[in-house]
Each structure stands twice: as structure tokens, then as C-alpha cells.
Image 1 (cartoon, each protein chain N blue to C red):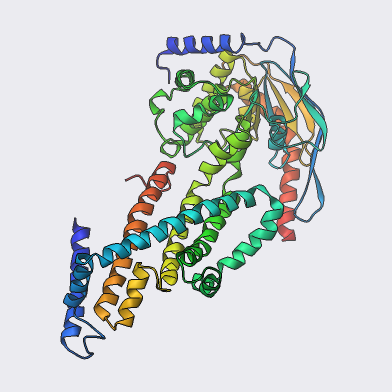
Image 2 (cartoon, chains in turn orange, cyan; image 1 turned 90 degrees about the vertical axis):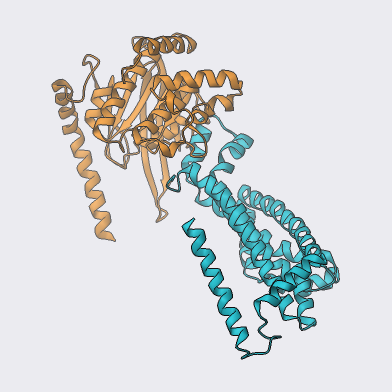
Length: 292
Length: 253
């Protein structure tokens, strides 16, 4: 993974300049602001289900925010709202002070199931967003190569998606997201389906890319340790309806590792908090089962 | 190679059994002609160009009829996909119409168009358009939602979303629809051509019956199977293979 670090750094530097000189976490600018954001939808039995209840969250420019919660707490739904793929029932999402009304390439999702296009090669996947923006082919190719280099996949540019391993697919997804030069990356349990070793590697890569590109990241996971390992801040969500239960500022020095005792210790504290919600979600699940 | 040898042996055996049965004279030769008569009928047909002309005429019917079906079928499919109201009304009608065997359109076609080429084309179009439309519809419904979300997320809208995401994402279903449409068109073609007045393969088949010429009937039948196999087995399957390979739906051996 550590091949040609100098070259990579150079590329990263260039991209940073391109992005307008990476705003870092130190600046207290609210990149994203969620105001009283609620969403309900109709369940199968036509009853109204409140998925998110008056969420208020702020994310500063360059901040790495992790959201943890039991499954079914609406944390993924929150990302869809920020991305503009779903509409909130009430409340709003502000990006740089402007209301988000639809999808935009300043906010790019990375899905758990990667969502790469199987009919395109790795390279064509990465340049997809640039193509939609109308960037010329020669320039697209050049930038695509640089982003692929950033995730160490330049040798696989002509491969099709099914020829790659799960970890490589997520790296392509990251490169594809970065290639549209978004301000905010929205990551929906991107590493949940990967084996532990691959996940560790991707944590390192993501931290490195984040540090050098200055992107704002909202990262959803059910894995508390992952959240502590990556985030500047961890928001714990309640189970149904999803609310922000508590926020934790994580001041541990970087680079961190999943095995660090400090990471494990902080994770344990948060997990105690989360346990209650997990129990509620399990209870709901068991009740569902007995009802059937 | 081994496979080809096996297939060759199989067909040789088949013809051998056929020759043997004909040789036993259980049935008169105008009921069960020996293979050599059928072979000669094929040879004569090609020598006097009557079969070549028939293939040409039938191909023209197919190209025209199937061509119209594909364009119409895809257009209908896109309309249904774009409009929920249309889908609920017209969509249901199409599915019920699809259950009608194409030969049942024949009386209507004759009354509307007379014993003409247009009647044949009408039967082909009615027989195959709907399966193209229905497959496109299925493709749209079964296509994983994540593709359209990822596409929108990356800045694809309207035409771009349709052309660069929705269309390729439903390509496996579209290919299936085109293949099915072709099979239906091919079947409808002969229903139409039996009307005579065309010089196509269907009419040669009917002429064989009228002249009590069993070798010709079998010769034309063999041709129909062979052409059908070549188009279906080679053309469509190779397109399908390429797609499956790209998408990783097949082990890439």
C-alpha cells in the first residue's frame, strides 16, 4: 500500500489546491447544518412511521463526523436527506447556508453496496461524475488516473467491477466520489461488508485522504469503535424515531488505530450509552417476530 | 472439438434412423420420404433459386416486421416507464394482449389489409412488439434502485440519467426482450406467410402441402429451424455472452 508515497503526496497536494485550498477542521464554519429535520413514511400497514425526529446537527468544514446507532434508527436515511435523494417531511438541510433542495455534486454518497456501475470499467466509473459535469475527455482521463492512484488502483483502470475484490470496489467508489470534487462525502456504512483486515487498511487510506484533501465527511456506521477510530466527533442516535442522543468530541491524536487502548476505552463509554438503544431495537425486532 | 464430434455423430445417427425407417417401407414415401429425397428437394430449391428467393422474401418480412416491433416496443416501453397512469392502464392491456397467439391476429389482418404483405407485417408486429415492451417494463422495475440513486447523486439528470444509467442498467432485460421479440416474430412470420401470395418460406411450405410434396415440406422445415438457430444461437447468444461477461454474470472462463 505504501508504494511511491512522494508521488501520491504530490497528487494529493494538487487536488487540494484544486479544491480551493483545503479548509481544515480548525475553522469553525458550518458546512452542513441540519435544522429540525424530520422524516416520516408510510409503513406497510399504512401507519405513519417517524424515522427521524427533529434532528439538529452542525458539521464544520473539514470535520469528520461519525453517526452511530442501532439498525433502523434512520441514520442512513439522514444521509439520503443530506444528499437530496429523499425529501424531508419537515425541517431543512443547509449547505454553506443555502437550503438543499435536490441532489448536487457538492455532496456525494458512498453506499454500503458501493453502487458502482457494472457496465462500465473502473476508469469509466470514476470519470462518470466529471462526464455529467461536461468536462472534456482528455482532462477526465488525466484526473481519473490521479484519483485511481490515490486509492492505489491505477493498474485496474480497465477492469470491470466484478473482477475486483470488495475492498477494491469500495476504493473505486471513494475515487469516484472524490472525482466529482465534492465538499462533503456522505458514507453509508461503506466498510460494513468487508473483512477486518481490508477494513483496517481502508480506515488508514480514508484518514489519509481526508487529512490531505480537507473534505468534510459524514460517516454512518453501527460500529462504535470504527466511529471513534475515524471521527472528530461521534453522534449517537436513538432507536426509532431517530434523534441525536448525545455527541462526543473525540480528541485522540491521529493517526489512530482500531486497537489503540484509548480508542477502545472511548468506544466502551459510547457503547454503554448506545446499549440502551440497541436493546430497544432488539426488543422491537423480537416483538415483530412474535407478531408474525 | 469433442463437443462438435459428438453433435455430428448425433445428427448422423438421427439421419441414419430416419433412412432406415424410410427403407422399411412401413409408410409410403409421400408420407415418410427418405433423407436423400429431402436433400434433393433442398438442392433443387437452391439450384432453381426458389428457396433463395423464399429466404430473401422471408428475411425482408422479418427485418421490416421485427424492426418496426423493436422501435415501437421500445417506444411504448419508455412511455410506460415514464408515466404511472399509462403503466396502470395500457400496461395491463398489453399483458393481456400478449396472451393472444399471433395466428389469432390473422383473420383480422386479412380483413384489414387483404392478402397482402402488409397483413404479414401486421401479424409479426402484433406478435413481437409486446414482448419487447414488457421486458423493458420488467427491466425498469427489477433494476436495483441503487444505480439510479448513484447516478442522480453523481449529477446525472433527465436525459443523462436515462441514457447513461437507466438504459445500460436495464440492458440485460432489454436483450432478453429483443431475443424474445425475435422468437415471437419468427413464429408469427410463418403464420402470416401461410396466407400465400408471398414468395416466402411459409408459402413454400404451404405449396409443398398443396402439391403433396413431402420432401419439399421437410426441406423447408429444416431450413426454418436452421435459420432460426443461427440467428438465435449465434447472434443473440453472442451479444448476451458479451454482456454477461462484462457484468460478471458468468464465470469468465
